[in-house]
Length: 130
Image (cartoon, rainbow, N blue to C red):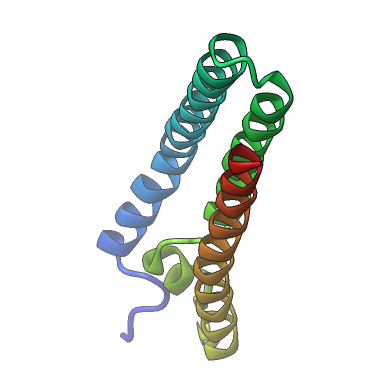
């Protein structure tokens, strides 16, 4: 008899992976949000309150929070290769189109993250220099 569907080892790995998605995502989001708020408060207090440049400090702090939000959005698209592979397989066989789509989306998300961070960082720099 020919076995049909994923092996028990594959099923076990898939269940463990799915169980880790929620807690890992929550830790990642909390880290990004905490870092963003911390950096924004440091800029707001250090450059705005102490330095006397409150307008620029508020703008720079807001851009820092924008970077954090962009990072959270983009990293949601950076799925692990294992998840992409699992999404492209069904008990009846694989679907190469789905795997290629998500690999391309993952690559796009990496480029988008770099561009967003560089763009926002440039705005912060320009604002602080003015």
